[in-house]
Amino acid sequence: MAIQFQCGFCKQPIEIDDEHASGAVGCPYCKKTVTAPAHSTLADTPHIPMASPAGDMIPNSATGPYAQSMTPLASRNTIAIVALVLAGMMLVAMFVTGMILAAHPLEFQDLVEKVENTGTDFKSQIDAMNAFLADRGGVPPIWLVVFSILQLLTWILWLAALICGLIGMRRIAKRKLAIAALSICGGYVVLMCANVFV
Image (cartoon, rainbow, N blue to C red; front, side, top):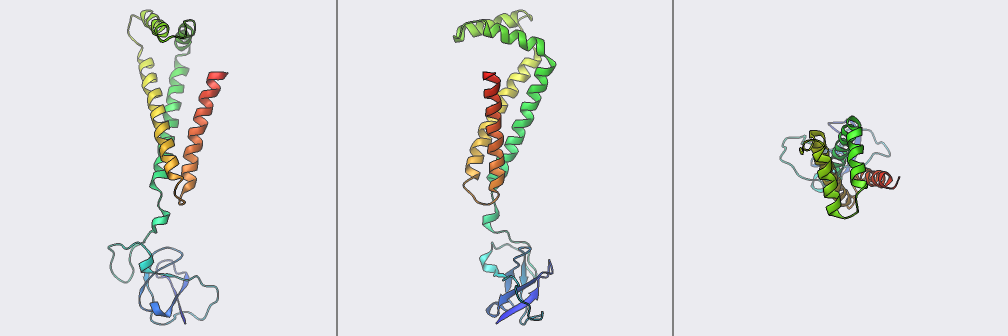
């Protein structure tokens, strides 16, 4: 016969098999561990969710009649959270590089024209970069240095977010975070391709 009682934390009605009377059980609502009474404390109520024995949940060091929350392993997907954070950092780096370019449009256009008007070989492009620097006293402008570092950082963050997102997809819990991170990575590639081919 089932024992029906209220969770000591969330006050929701739950029930447990009488074999678990006076034992620690996990509330199906708030996922916290409560001690089941020896007898029902509620009138016979239909459609009450069944609590699970505390042994089916992750143990922790809490003691007393009401233990702390116990999170099932299945609800953890830290790598998906990391992927989304990395993707967000990538967006910030990309935004800052865009702001740098917006602040120096003529200089950047001059650099692009010099590089595009040379051959496709690496030596010609290096010569074009040297010509650009020679026009500015042989020292690269600060904005160009910061822009280059941020571009490199953006690609590193993109790669890290992509790898973490793919790993996060292997877990069911919080998979939406991994999907969001991968969507951001895919959007970045589309933007880069559009910029190249337009």
